[in-house]
Amino acid sequence: MPLKPSSSFRKVLTLKPTDTLARFKDPALCGNLLDRIRAELDGPLAFMEVCGTHTMAIFQSGLHSLLPPEIRHLSGPGCPVCVTHEGEVAAFLEMAGKDDVIIATFGDLMRVPGPRGTSLKLAQAEGCRIEVVYSAFDALALAQKHPTAKIVFLGVGFETTAPTVAATVKIAAEQGLNNFFVFAMHKLVPPALSALLQDPDVKVDALLLPGHVSTIIGTEPYQFLATDHGVPSIITGFEPLDILQALLLIIEQRKTNQPTVVNQYSRAVADAGNPQARKIMSEVFAVSDALWRGLGTIPHSGLTFHGDYRRYDAREVLGVEVQDLPPLPGCRCGDVLKGKMKPSACPLFSKACTPASPVGPCMVSTEGSCAAYYKYAL
Image (cartoon, rainbow, N blue to C red; front, side):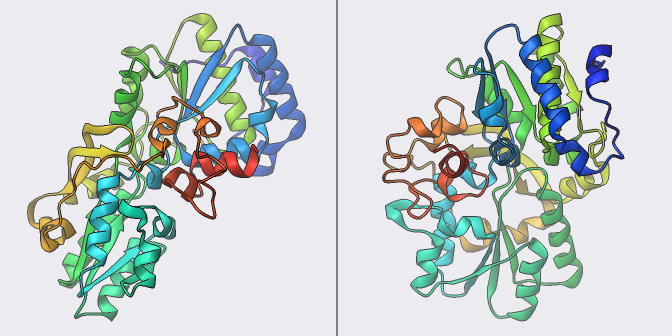
């Protein structure tokens, strides 16, 4: 059963799901919650947020500097661009180099460094045909506009974006488009959390679970975090009060020794998630093993095409393989994604690696931990 906030906690936070977002930034309520956190905290607490949007929210709101020093904030593998493996980057750069291919990609992937310092941005400057799009549907429009070219959409992201990509593929099938393809690099969050918590070097007391992903998968896939690992885990929103409430719930769980999964973000996340989105995703994709930057191969943590939809698989159509390549020299992005070190501890941080000249994807992405530290914590 979900943990219920204590009566004293409810006196502090009396917000309702119908309240405006401005109410979730209320300085007085934030101050009250911070006071309660300081009063209730019973020792050091290391929590990890598993969403790039949470990473930025914690820094942008100033919470990172306001939390008690006993609370240690770690960033996890929640940035989709950051967890894209070196081998996947090399594969889509190989695809970009083919004469009859137009790559359709989100903007964050343009500057992700690949082998020997290459990137989509550099490939574009050298004449490769690369288009920045805002959705898979935009890539579908490119396929309609360029019928003689192979349009390859780079499908990165977690359970949040995979259903829209699956829906786009289904539309392509209905329209009979035979020049639209997807390089599926989608990752599934729960298996990655399992791999993290089984790593003896990862020291995490609690988890803030991703709100966007949870709108799709609901609460059930996270239950093992509490039952198997004894880790308090809170699905939470992105406003300051959301995050502070989640931390207070974690502290209450720890004091009562009742680790559980709580859906704090009930105004957006249903416990059952979105069954229709999952249905569309399962019609097009099958679960597979996947490579993660810094985490290696994680069983059952990725998606691949199955059945008749395999004809939309860019890997098969273009004959490109994803290899398990070594990390970029000097880049400690993998350790940052596992919470083993803070970005500022990387010897390249703010020196050789800056937003203007990134060495690794954690400094490239707007949701990357290194980019957040560089912008808000220097």
